[in-house]
Length: 79
Image 1 (cartoon, rainbow, N blue to C red):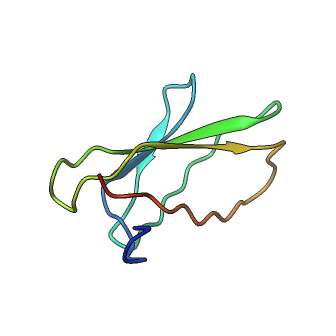
Image 2: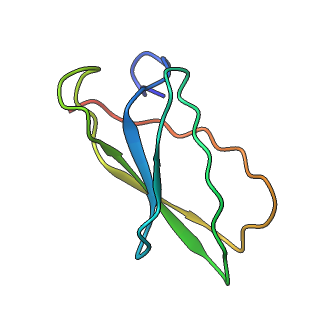
């Protein structure tokens, strides 16, 4: 979501640090993927759609010993 407006963000790339997998957020801001985890996991959020929805800063979030389905609310600051 946008930190400023609270609106969902489409086109944000969510990736797992040091792994090739990623997902792009949908129009409602949702995303999903499966990854094996053997400890902490760092998710990286990056605006990759250019100026389409505004420009947002990149953000990393560490999940500590994740297991099962996880629901996150990530707020990204506009550049």
